[in-house]
Length: 444
Image 1 (cartoon, rainbow, N blue to C red):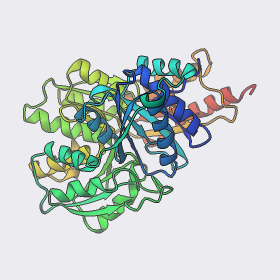
Image 2: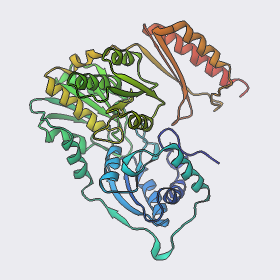
Image 3: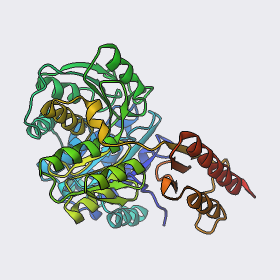
Image 4: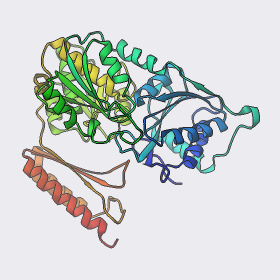
């Protein structure tokens, strides 16, 4: 059986890997796996040019299996998760490739309550996919309804999560020409902030283009020039947020979790005293949690795995270095706008600058390298390169860390090395990357 789902749904180049035909069959397959013809499905998308094409095909598949489809239009991924729970829908579907360029697109699902599907349910959809046939004929096909107030419902939800105003604060927002281009500025302006908005002119092809969470240097320059109190860069579907402090320094998800954990712990509000992160979190984050006397748990990459562990442990906070942050009391998945609002609220409540709050964590130099072999081969457990990895792990000891993993969204291998110095991290990462490339290209 072919595996379609990766780390975060199904993703690939639009109209080549991810075709309308695949989307249609996926819609048909999802219905029996997620509740049958009686299910109600919320569907939203980002601003990619291929979004409407895939949405139409997916919706056709859902309708052909008898589902009722609730269309939310262009809206952030966390908004679809929220609407799935708010409207008591069986399923939510987002058409987005997150931080990828416009050529790519993806389809990811939420189950009841707005929680991302577990692996077992995805496998069930894949089984159905191989034999999916229309299950409704004539008048039994499903119906489509527009959620005309989708943005209003989501913004109201965001504002209900906070209890402060931002009068007197200057905030720079980079919406990546993506799904948050209207709602993010609207939320901050509703709280009284003076807002400079970037990435709010989507044309279907400029999503994430030299902007957003993968290019925080853009807002860093604006924060410094204005000057602003803080800046927040979202990605194309607004489920992640990268911060920039008042000094122009970029602060990733590890900093955000450290700041929030410290703030709550000092006020005796972190119950239980647990934070969940992934294997990608910096060693400095680990040490910060130890100093705060906060228990931390690591999961594999993917905010759905973080959420699963949060549910298991009762943790209020979890997330990823990349900026997917989950506030368990308010959301069931990573929410970039909510993250930005929470950080701004802590700045407001403490009266401290974001640069000062960021001192709770000292980041170890970290080097990330992507290895994309021409052979297309992937790493296996029986390959000799793991001996090279083990050798460098012994060399670094407790003064560094090595992580090698296969990407779940792209055909490449990722190498991450942390060390006391940037030079040492770069040296080790390059040596491991070279070893991987040599092994994967051998006998290609």
